[in-house]
Each structure stands twice: as structure tokens, then as C-alpha cells.
Image (cartoon, rainbow, N blue to C red; front, side, top):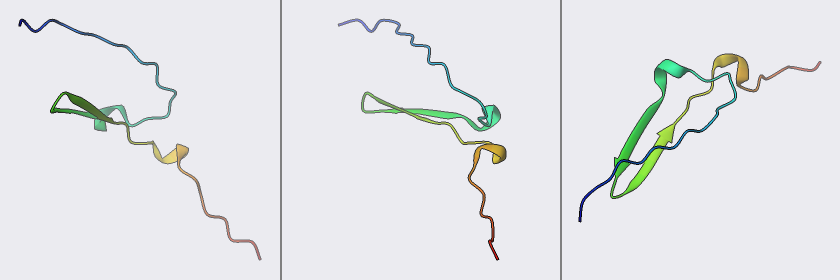
Amino acid sequence: MDSGVFSRSVAVAPPVKADEVTAISRDGILSVTLPKAEEARPRKVTVA
């Protein structure tokens, strides 16, 4: 059986650290890691 070419595009809402995106294919499963940029992470605010 021949392997074919497959392509899929997914729109990702910013902010994502584009230079730190990784993708790994293992046993037919594709895992993609999209780290959030600092401005997208929740912040702790101390309330006095």
C-alpha cells in the first residue's frame, strides 16, 4: 500500500508563540503543541 500526501489547515487565534510550536507524529497520531504567549495567560491579582 502506498502512502499518500495529506494536508490540513487549522486557523489558530493569536496570541501563540509561533516560534515554539512543535508537532510530533507517533504511531499514526499527530500531537501539536501551541504554547500561549504571555499576554494570553491568566494573571493573579491580589485583592486587599
